[in-house]
Image (cartoon, rainbow, N blue to C red; front, side, top):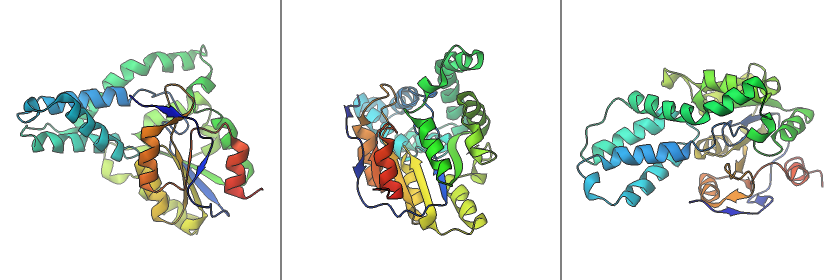
Length: 276
């Protein structure tokens, strides 16, 4: 169980300012369409770990915690990497792992079963897209665009689904053709590759890059090039407060500031753009 704590903005170190581009994660950073994915992946992976020679002799809670930790450490990467990780854990526990793609397909079908109603409601207009976004996400995107930043979207979710879900939420226009997602040939895509390409193509130093994400990977990637990384410790289920478990791991990844969502946009703007 995660616990929400209320902190509007937690500043770890000053923002550099002078940004020219911003890269945003999608799920948990903008979109809540896939809210609850952890409640599918973690128990599923725990079942896989339990069904191994060593796993049968281990308390389930220990395996659950083990799965949750490696899942979060790969959050932000393509989903296949979490499936590669569970295959490795199965082998460590004396089991015989299947191809990681098998685990990805099984997980994704479980997830689609959960979110199908949300997708259909967005398609037919019976659900307000705002209810399936991190609070005030549209205002954030407007602010970044008004500040003259070029917006990039990069997700570990398969690209075809990211494109569809961004369209359903009405955010595609902020990014144009700068929306990137996972590929079947997973070695051909990563958020690090997107960052390297955008810096190279725009002749930017890493200090001119701003990043937002709720996963370990995108925070590390932005910090690795010298950018400013905002950890979005969103409590996805309640749409309010900070998820304390996320917060701790985002800080560990090197986030420069932690926010729960974008409700206190004035404070965030002041921090990023030094308007006060």
